[in-house]
Image (tube, rainbow, N blue to C red; front, top):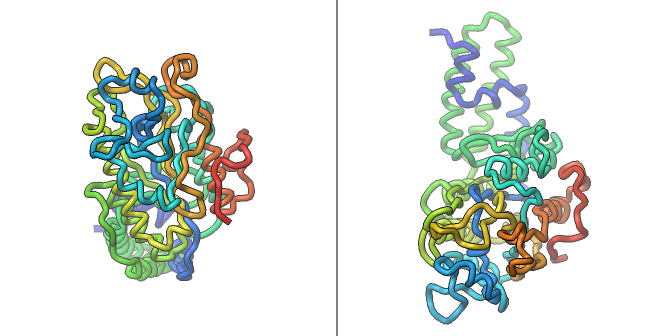
Length: 404
C-alpha cells in the first residue's frame, strides 16, 4: 500500500524532525559528536507548586509551627523523623536526606523565598509565565531556554525528556523531545521503513534524492545512538528517575547536548499533605533520590553540568482545614553542580510574621527566579545577552556565588 506524506507524519512520530527540516539537519546532528565534553544545563520542573516551607524548613521561626500545627516538620535533633540541620536556621525535610552529603560537599545550593513575581494562583498561567520567562505577559511566543539557544549549534543541543515539547523550549531553535533513547530508536526504525516505501513510490527524482539523504541521516543517527553509554546509578523507579538517567547518558555520550529538560509532577498538596511522612514526603524522596543518583552517576562531569529546579509557585504559609496547603507565592529552588558555591542557602529571608507575609498568607518573594537562571546562563554557559533571554528584566549583579 502506498504510504502518503500525511501518514508518515502521523504514524512515525518523527514527522517534524524528519520532514520539518532538511536532511542536513540530522546529518549535522550525527556529525556533531566530537567526543569533547561541553557544559550543560539541566532544568527540572516540579509541576503543581512545591511546598518550599516544608522542603527547606525555617525551624527558628516560631510562626512556622504556629501556622502548621499538624504538618510542620519537627526541628532538628539526633534522631529520625526530624528536620536535617543546614545552618542553624534552615533544615531539610528528612525525605531530602540524600541531598545533605552533596550540600555538605559544597556542590548543592538552595535559594529560598524565590519564584515568579507574578501574583497568579493559576497553575496554567504560573507555569506559562515561568517557562516563557515573561511573568504577566501571555503573548510571548517562545520559551526562555529556546531564546538562549538562539538558533545556533546542533539539533541535539537541546533535548526534553518529556511526553511533548515543553513551553520553555518553544521557538525557532531546534529542540527534540523524547521519553527515552530506546523510544527514539524505535521511532527512527519505523520512520526508516516508511520512508523507504514513500520514496520508492515517488516519481520525482529530486524527491527521491532528498529521501536518500534523509535515510542516510537517520542511519547516521543510529550509529550515534550505539555510542551512548548504558544507564548507570541507582535512580528511583518511575518516569522521573528514568528520564534523569537518560539525560545523564546523553551528557556522557558527548553529543553536543547543552540544554536538557525534564519534569516531575504531583506537588499540588491541598489535602492530607503530611509532615515527615505522607504525600509531600514521598514526592521529596523521589526528587532527592533522583538528583542524588544523577550527581553520583556523572561524577567528575558534574563540574561541567548545572542542574536547577523550578516550581510555578509555593504554598500558603498556613495549613488549610484539610491538613494541606493551597496555592501560594515564593518557594525554594535547588542548584547543583558546576562551579556554584553550594553548602549555603541563598536569598534574603522575608519572615513569617503576619505583617511579613505576601497578601497576608504566603511566603514573600525576595529573589526572582530569573535572577538565578540568568546567573547560571551567564556564569556557567557564557551567555552574553541576558536581556534577549529575559526581556524587560534587570537582573541583580549576582544571585549565586561561583568558584573561580
